[in-house]
Amino acid sequence: MAFIEAHNLVKTYTPRGSGIVRALDGLTLAVPRASVQALLGPNGAGKTTAVKVLTTLVVPDSGTATIGGVDVMRDGDLVRPIIGVSGQYAAVDENLTGFENLDMVGRLYHLGRQESRARAKELIDLFDLTEAQNRPVKGFSGGMRRRIDLAGALVTRPRVLFLDEPTTGLDPRSRLGMWDIITSLVGEGTTVLLTTQYLEEADRLADSISVIDGGKVIAEGTSDELKASIGGQRVELNLVSASDRQKTFEVLARHGNSRPTISPDERTLTVSVVDGPTALQLILAELGASGVALFDAGMRRPTLDDVFLRLTGHAASDEDSPNGTGKKRDTGKKRPNRGRRARDEDPTPSPGAAHTDPDRT
Image 1 (tube, rainbow, N blue to C red):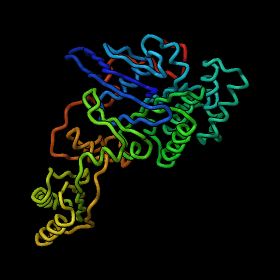
Image 2 (cartoon, rainbow, N blue to C red; image 1 turned 60 degrees about the vertical axis):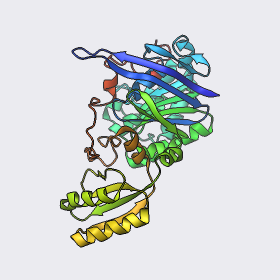
Image 3 (tube, rainbow, N blue to C red; image 1 turned 30 degrees about the vertical axis):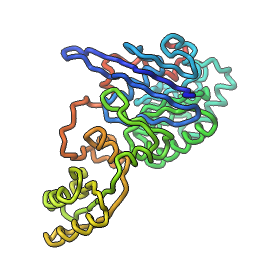
Image 4 (tube, helix red, strand yellow; image 1 turned 90 degrees about the vertical axis):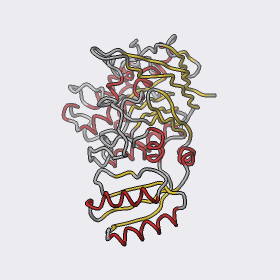
């Protein structure tokens, strides 16, 4: 039986000076206990609005949602004590130290002084913030603020943890550490629902992935199931010179069964093919005859990025990707105008991070 359930959630907004925005358009989810469910989607897909509904911060226009059998809309006071939430942006008090922030969260949850301080110390050590624990948070780096915020979501050892793009702003070492912590929590019985644009993160952590676009789930399954659903093999080429991009694109288009995609630096091109070995040989022969120099060439199985591209018509957003290029991948299709970031899904002011006040309505 699912521990988190949502059925046909609909949420619309009417921003000033524009038409109706359907942030959620019949979203349905079912998350088993002690598992990781990833919501994968582009900016503006509805991920953050879904989290806000499930954490009692936003009331949907229609639909139902339960956590552990408790109605989220009707019995929010019973839901809030069993959940922890970390939003996209760190909700910390900059004038307090890291330790004081966590102690404050414990007191808001009515933990005793000794228990609250002990839990704060435990989390400080867990998130590798021991040396900085007595410094005001306003002097923290972005990654350190993120870690304190995530630690705050764990103060009460919640049965359900909602993580909205949890590793945004973290360096690779901290990101790997966060993945280990999430895996450990699930092993101890915590149910985790996370939103992410990092395909590697979903691939690594999620027991099941829901691909969201336009406010609804358009595909669902394990990482392997989603990859298998689009089938085929990919031929991928790395060019010595980006000036050969157009010529290579045309060759791949002739031998592939989909429109080739091009990386932001215009040196890596990929195309889906039916018979990988045969297609690769023909492509290499034609490029060789045309004088196109390659750094590398090969075949690979589909990735989550390929799944995302096939389902949504564009690759996952690269603007927040770890490579830091800040560029969008050229898919050959015009990307819908979905807004700047997922916060634009919800034009209303955010009530704040749920983990900072269990009594907030």
